[in-house]
Amino acid sequence: MEPVSGRDAASPDIAIRAQGLTKRFGDLVAVDKVDLRVPKAQVYGFLGPNGSGKSTTIRMLCGLLTPTAGEIEVLGLQVPRQAEALRRRIGYMTQRFSLFEDLTVRENLEFLAAVQDVPRAKAAGRVDALVEQYRFQGMERQLAGTLSGGQKQRLALAGAVVHSPELLFLDEPTSAVDPESRRDFWESLFQLIDGGTTILVSTHLMDEAERCHRLAILDHGVLVADGTPTALADSIKGRTAVVHVAQPRRAHAILGRLPGVLSVAQVGNALRILADDSGDIATRVRDALAAAGMPAQVEAAPPNLEDVFVAVTRHRGGADSQRERAA
Image (cartoon, rainbow, N blue to C red; front, side):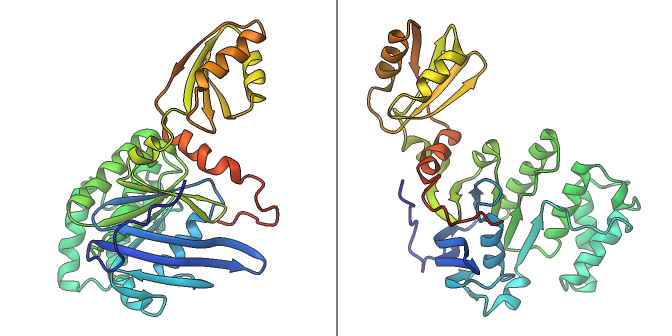
């Protein structure tokens, strides 16, 4: 699957443009010639396993890490040359929640407002607004270290936007919280989008990736797919099927050796099949199982992002034995 280039780099609707972005650490290639176009006022997702290069890419886009090669333009500024000017216009949040646990909720926000040079005359009003927006009324004097995981996440997000950034970078921000907190967090992100903020978020969670307006899939530092979740799924239509069979574990072993099958995954009592092309996968699967004395019901299934991820990365598994994964 070829990456989609997106709109022209000069378009005012583009928040981030990267061309040939590369980062090497000695012999290790952590990010390899990545091209990006991130539209404004959208959630753009980086999907990939731990070590796929997501964090390294984000750090280069923020100006925190100097690329080995390539060009970066963020909000019209050249990075890393104009990284200091960019700092005042972006927010950055990681999964580690950069909070001072021995300070109160309000003290954390006041400190971060000062760090981000929010004028003192405006800081108190801005903190008041964030306390209300992120539901910390009555908790302003509570120490951050005593908050729940979801509350810490909300406070970290409030701190990341205390200076009203145009662009927000989120690096695996929900990996340490429960599903309900994740859902609430995403509602907060879409509220920011409604206000014109652009968000770039990295994740390894498929359900989060489906929430993004646009998505890039990284594998061993290489951009292997880029598009809307719907378009990416449509690109592998006809290659997925569900198999209902009396002995799913035995059928799993048989289908795993069937030529043209990329992946077999058990889901409950059924098997989900991903093929390497859009040929008649149902017939091939049915015939293979019938030959083994295992009659089966095989149905076409709509592809999902997990199927897309397997389809664009499975063939790369042994492509470069010298490449190591880097965060």
